[in-house]
Length: 564
Image (cartoon, rainbow, N blue to C red; front, top):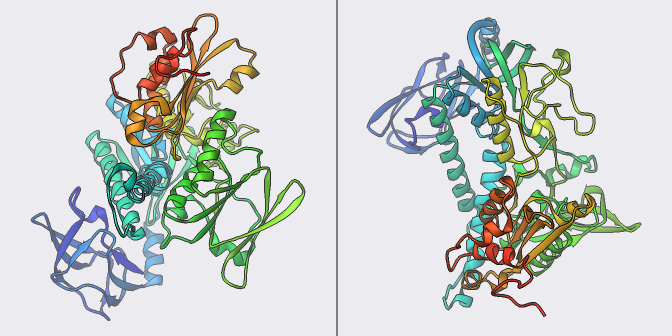
């Protein structure tokens, strides 16, 4: 077993320490709790102890060495018999905690709910079996956006001449890109730990089991805790959908998003099965980093929830980036070749096709993860269509004091939606009436260009038989976009033909994921397009395109664009 320096060993926000003393040597027999190393960080002396009994196999550091979080300090051959005996002796359930609200899952739904409840004066316990921040912060939203930014910078350097600049010998170091990503993730997770601590949220690491509606058991390595609780919020998230098409020999080439964010080196060729948000975002990241990317999408369009003009725009951008897309394509198998590659068989219109790749990213979607909880035993009902937990508008399950939020409900798979659901659940638990509205949740897609949408799309309005007006303004007519050298895309606003209220909008182009907030505010508050028109937008900014799209709804049209 490897003994590593952990962030929890050091003072808050300190990532490096100097070894001042090594208390053991190779071959020594040690007991659990024995001091093994002393370090100094930020003028503080830290003593490290071992959690296991055993024999020191190898010491990998020396006195005076500066070590960072994650450094392997030594290797120990664990005394298995003693460890099992100690664990057995310690695993006695302890009724030692009382809580007003117990939250299972520390992702963007769970930890936000914990902070909100604590701020409202509740006694809160948060249980997380792995890392605070959940999938979003550790293996999803945040790390992927860190890679998006690195890929963007590299792409800008390659195109420096367009801006009158010169950059020679352009290159990147993948390990440093990953290192930057990890640094950002660590900073944010430590920030969450600090916030929870300052608001006196009891954070417990372990696997949760719901014994009954008022009792939660937490299984840890050496003990079990019992929490007597008045209310429970389930926030166990989601997990990738796995297609059973990969042979055993080919599994070493298969990636899910978690592994894709921790690759030791970049492949030359990557196949992505799935053309949804995850698939497209990774496609643009890797393509910009000079990886040859192919997407295999089962449906007739990528990002099929969007309007045709948006799909056309991003498909053209993908083609320009060298991303090859097969739609209406069913992946049939992934096998290993004799020359250490993956062979992907897929079918289009009844015809078999084959491509090879160094890695295959499975991105066909995610499904509710119930965290191994036996929910039906306690009366919680699951939805037949999604497998998620059935909840009402208050985020309440069929058991009146048990709530569920986030991906595990099968409602929507967006971190910001999970956070808001958490706030709704907490308010209802603490006797503030609140209901969840799913009609005004923005969606952000970090492709190149970015895509963002909120409210109704044109397709949805047509399916509902609504009378609407469409105002559209091209990004290429926006001054700020021209200065950025990013002119692909448009802003589209959909309004009610009768009362002029904003029903929805889509933005494709630079800063789309930030700009969508203005349209979200309009939809959420039932504002009219006239309210947007009457609002002075700063110049020169990308936001002016929203103003122009609103003007395009009027007979006189946009000011800065004339369509023949």
